[in-house]
Image (cartoon, rainbow, N blue to C red):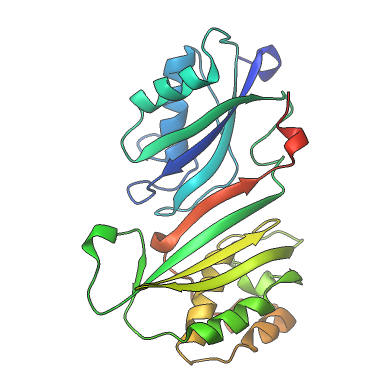
Amino acid sequence: MHESQAKRNIKLVIAYNGAPYHGWQRQADGIDTVQRRIEEAATRVARHPVAVYGAGRTDAGVHAEGQVANFHTANVAIPPTGLRRAMNCRLPGDIFVRSAREVPAGFHAAKSAIGKTYRYRIYLGPQRPVALYRQVYCYWRPLDVESMQVAARRLLGEHDFRGFASSMDQRDNTVRTIRRCEVVRLDSEINVTVEGDGFLYKMVRNIVGTLIEIGRGHWQPDRIDRIFSSRSRSDAGPTAPGDGLALMCVHYRPADLEL
């Protein structure tokens, strides 16, 4: 079915545990991804082939509390709440559609987004928390939260984040605006929350890896300024594992969601 023939555009908000999957994006046959599971469930419910568009291509092992996707359907018989319930009955237990609503035909989960919020969870302690397996990054060294907070504040605003991007990211424009970067200690965890207008490939995980190096005393908080100046990936910290990362929210203009 061509999109021009579709009568409805459905926006989904999805939560998932990314540990068992090879990321969000559909890949070759036989490789299990979240997008593949969502498309299969939507196709069964809508009773026609469905292409699902996600707001972001989370990597293998990365989780989501608020991933957004949309798909077009000519099925007008099932209300969005019914679509949500029926899809959840056909999805595995580690994927859950939190909400479904009809949106304007021009809405696109990725192209309409104006920002995203990610959270990274670092677990501190000598004992591995079995109940949080692959939900957090277990780090056994002590970390200076105050130094990490000072460094996080240096990330705020508009900067060229080339030095925090993976070498695989070949985009010409690497300028992004970070609106929020918070480091908070919660019992045995340190949570890093980053909100921005957009992110380069592995940018959040590279930011976290750099903050960890600062927290353990390897670098001073002004290391952030050096990375901005040099634009060199080698000046930033190692890429933090995907286990601790979750896409929490995708932001849109209210007008883009109203029919």
